[in-house]
Length: 238
Image (tube, rainbow, N blue to C red; front, side, top):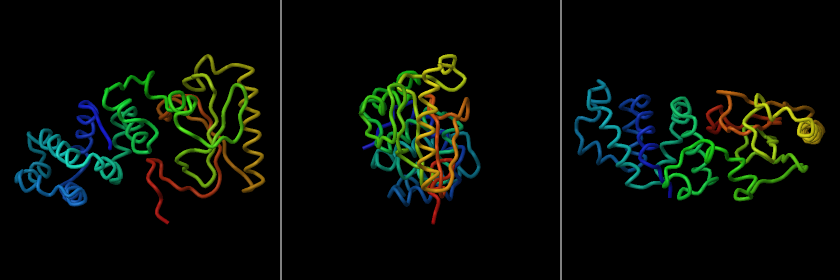
């Protein structure tokens, strides 16, 4: 179901090694029906608790075992509190790729089996998936130069994304300063904000730059209403 290449799996095992304690591992083994790993590796919990020198190999073996048992267990690991945030800190590209894979936004045979993690080729969800039509979105407003659509994984009750139809890294890129593009962006923002203002009474417009930016394609967010997800993408209970 989900496939990680060797380098991606190695990075994820490092995240788990640095973040999970013995209790976390016990819970993970139970949830994935992999308690037999700990039964066969009797020193595992001791190694985790005392950070023994063979801990790195232990965690690599544990992750390999869990994913070999059922590749769908990647989703279980990904939903553990804090794992997404810690992965993002370790490797933003990997965090983006795993999230997209779990969301069904990319084909695992297209990215993860081949091991192509060059950000210019595979870390642009908007160019690779949205603008090619491979990932269907619900369009809100469109011009020749920009596209606005409902966020596929909304963080708020109302969450719209606005992107240019050509690749631009971010607001600080020189090609972002384009009069025609700016005009179309303002048209799209005006359309979306006017609509949300009538529906909710108000909204917020924002754009991330640099380390704040997980998708390396210039985009604006327009959002309003109740927050649905935490910053790491996990759903807010209630």
